[in-house]
Image 1: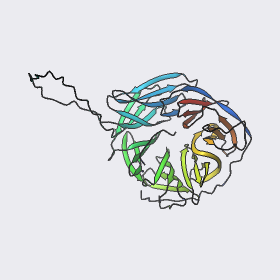
Image 2 (image 1 turned 90 degrees about the vertical axis):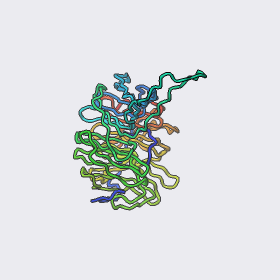
Image 3 (image 1 turned 30 degrees about the vertical axis):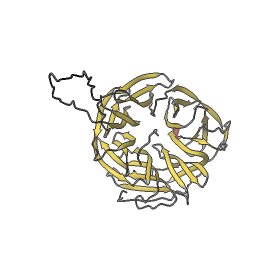
Image 4 (image 1 turned 180 degrees about the horizontal axis):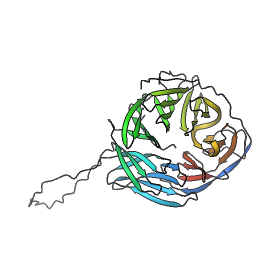
Length: 400
């Protein structure tokens, strides 16, 4: 899943690293499909992130009142709100990423301020006030949100736990991936990003990854405790040097905290960036070469070797989402007609979702005027593909 954040951008010495040249082993085969529509389920202009579970669509929003709080909502697949919960501990808190695990728990992560303690003051009885001046109570200053906080909710929205992770320096949270082996958290500071490994509610270790010349956008935690990270880099990582102007990066960190694999996606003089991914190593990203901009769509195997790939002229931003029976979705804004797709008309600001089967064959296409600037997507067997746009429209692909 991808979120709207203006975060700070993040050299790690690797013990083991290999590189595989990104030369596609197979090309996605086009097939003519008719465009189908999205259906609007509801609209939530405040939503800042979303996940789709087997039971519901979960969104979160940050709200400001007496303190900064978080609102969590569950919506059914017909667009009706099931429940709404507010995280309000009395201190400031903000969420920046959301995930869920196989047990159905919903995980929010972000930053919070430390609990404030009341100040003691000496009362001066009988103080003189000949001018009858009204003394105003001082406005309490809000504490800096230096803590990294993790909230666990039940499928019904009950708060099960709140954990403050103790890091050596304050950081902002980019992404979280959770499974039964623990959680992997991507953090940002002024000097670059790092990966925090969490188990049993405690920070086990934090690994610095590159400098501000590397930027990761998506992470997934494996069952073995390893973490895969996807993004871009213009520096040497894991002993692998820059090949293009900016390279797309696929990087794996072992459970022990060392880089175990690095793959660079590059082209001479080009800018590449993997922007979104699924847990099965399906990636979407941008390729910029001169004035030419394309969305790259590639499926990789567990060793980060490409199994099929294709590209489409686009504005550059994209999302990846899983589908049924090993299929995948690529969501982006095309700038030319889509080869193999009938009934699609290019409109500025309007995106399309293309569905590919496990072999890279095009099997579906979906669009809608409201599908503008999508920034989060998810899938469930009951609902199909669900997309959240920057305008707060929650859309479901019809006729999946």
